[in-house]
Length: 114
Length: 112
Image (tube, rainbow over all chains, first blue to last red; front, side, top):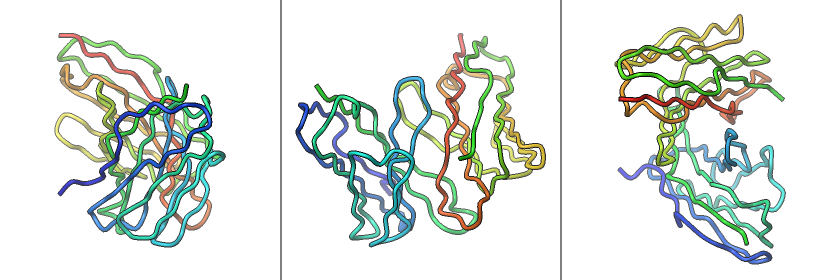
């Protein structure tokens, strides 16, 4: 049982380039999330999804896009990378039912835009 | 949106000491979770505790929803407890998508 898998773990982008951060979970969770963590700060929600085909904006969605074609996958797309997007990105999932509300996080992607 | 404040921001302990971390939130919540981020960056869920008290080994947590705060207790601390502890909540605004708002965390350092 792998939980939540994120790839890549590290990436350096040049300003204006694009990339996709991959996130896959094998727990059959309906809810998936993308957060970013800046130094000394808590996590801020970028986008979330409550099931396949349904996505919605979080607190800081500008410069990002998502899709959710399957229950397992929730990729995050960065278009026209900017230095302000330098951060650590975490994907998470949670299930329904009181035993499953707790988040499971991936190991993170450290992104640097230069 | 809902505000989450954690205290203290930093805490240094000797191994074996006990500690209490506090989380205050500005509105009623239907979801509150505590996380530990280890020095390698991995985030681990410790408790789902929108109200009441739970215990897991040396860790326990209490949420007093009516007074809008939660406490995380660490007893007999070990060096492996070092890292950042986050409190995260979802406001009770009707419906739930389990979206969490995070505090800035408490950085705990446990020295041998």
